[in-house]
Image 1: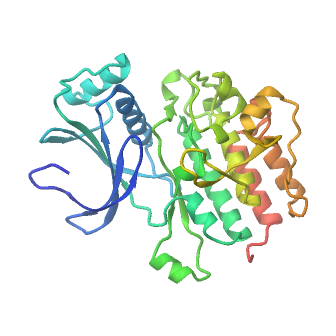
Image 2: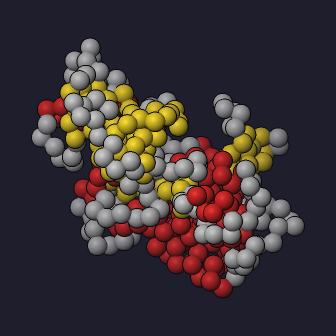
Image 3: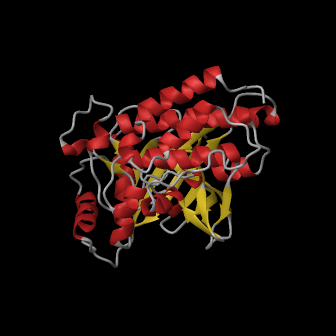
Length: 346
């Protein structure tokens, strides 16, 4: 990171995507490990994604163990770097906001602009890779469901709609010595990450004290990843209940180990779908075409699944968003299932 006295030392690249590069880094003063995401602001689309992530993570006034924490955001223009805060009066920050609002570059395109996000370092990769490299475990499934529902309830209480929940955007922190070399220690910690498509709804005039108010904030931009998108997202008129649908897809796929192969990357991914002939159709798209479609849960006849879990997945995947539980109710129902029905020893 460019500065006369750099606070961080980049160690190695750990991930690369369309919009940026992620590095493992160390805080020079303490040696603590952090993740540093570098996003080049060379197009309005990149700027908008970067600012959405910044606005979402910087709007959270408290931390949650299952939501990635933003330690610092640094805005760099050529050799000039400055820490960025929400609502900054900096001219560099204003240029990025103007670029996002107008949809065209509002600064000198010959200058290199970058945003650096300093966040929690997660040493276990993503949820998709973690689960598919291990044998199914009811204990792990239970832990992950509880962590994810808690994270989503926290985000919705903070008026944040994620809009791209999927296993690839959920990171794994394995903790001290990888839980004693994969012994029967505590399950790893999940961190919901990648807020580039998120939306903060607090500016809508809704009550921040009402945990369900985020479900009254209607959005119209269809975005996300096909296999996790709710029917109403395909139509372009949706609320935070779209996140509930995505979590339902993840939970169903995790419990039954339902996977598909991504056409572009040829990577095996956790995700639920409907078979139409030989074609795999995303659940949301299939339910949009036929809202009365009956989902076969469990998909495998030999799969053991409690009646409460079957009903929870059905409710989360309802074609009608009004019939889905909100994030707080979903969390409470999963806690009850975990306490009463699931065996933590397997």
